[in-house]
Amino acid sequence: MSAPKIQTRQRQEQITQAALDLINDSGVTGLSIAGIARRVGIVPSALYRHFSSKDAVLDAVLDLIGQRLQDNVAHVRQKTPVPLQQLKLLFTRHTAMLSENRAIPHMVFSDAVYYGQPGRRARVAQIIFTYLKEIETIIASGRQDGSIRMDVATATAAVMFLGLIMPAAILWNVSGENFDMATHIKTAWPAYERSIAAQTPKEAL
Image (cartoon, rainbow, N blue to C red):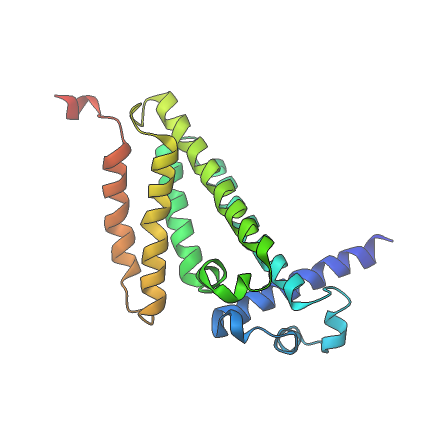
């Protein structure tokens, strides 16, 4: 009984990834059941066995994006217990994720995602706020261990963290990948770190 369930889950994951790839190439308006089916290598009628509509596929894509954000958080926590290092690694992973997936800004900012789906905007907001809470938790841990200043507001610093990334990803996207993301990563993180890090004894002298 488990094999069909596994096969179904795998097919659903294939369909969701194909939809994300198609949005990456053609935007949300370029998404179609036929296009997704072609990428997966199935007929459109077979896709409907797994998703009832294109809207259901879009919801699955949002779930995938939310899961990848959470996976990034879990990864940095496994890599290091140091909050500032966690934030630095998360910054690098998040920026890479957006560079590799232009579909994510499309999903967040395209009106086509929300047209006729009033609840989907709240769904996107929930994904972002859940991610922000994880960043706040890391910042709060840094305040507790003394590596981040106590006067740093966790919620504000978390929003600032996202502010390092999203505008740069949009510039990279709209400039046809001419915006220098590598330089941005190199220069933006130290500026952010200086704005929240506690003084070291050497600096205090």
